[in-house]
Length: 115
Length: 113
Image (cartoon, rainbow over all chains, first blue to last red; front, side, top):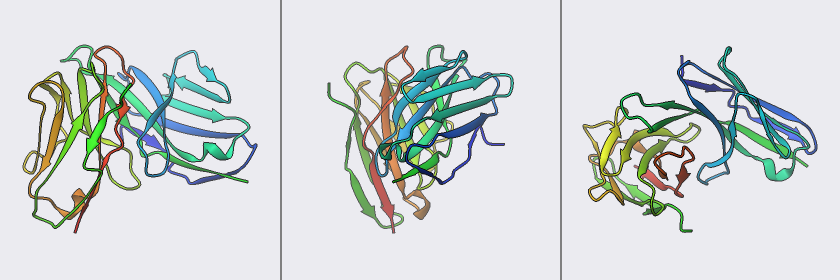
């Protein structure tokens, strides 16, 4: 089983719609969770962290379910500029190197917003 | 604030040749990462440095890949000899000691023919 699994898509969604991405992780010791965004031929950039209580940033909502080892990202009122690949990222703190995080990336979910 | 700098941006080499990539992290960032991203996949960690020490190199193909960060600042990743399957984007990233937001450079695109 992969450490971080995502549906690769592609998701083709009309502008203004709501879209949700899911991600599962295998290591129950995982400490922190993130969503990164990667535009075509660009580097990944942090979109938002994911907290146990769930968190929202404008049109974006991230949720974590530790019991099911499941992370989600919801985008409301999607814009053309939301077209990108969304990478689920899980951080396992290295026991032997306290304070040093080990980030494992999923394969990414490709989203295209259609006018 | 200057971001993570990488060079060269693009490189085309023949198989069995060697190549080196350079990275200068964000000033003050103690942790430096090299990731390999093959088309259609997520970034895969090759090696992670804390200052000039190696924290994790478990996924680095050590028979052909090497990396160093001698003075705890900039870093070099070398591939020798290259194989066709090494064609990928090599992403350098950095983060502060305690923070876990990592910042990526634009990447070095390698094509092995």
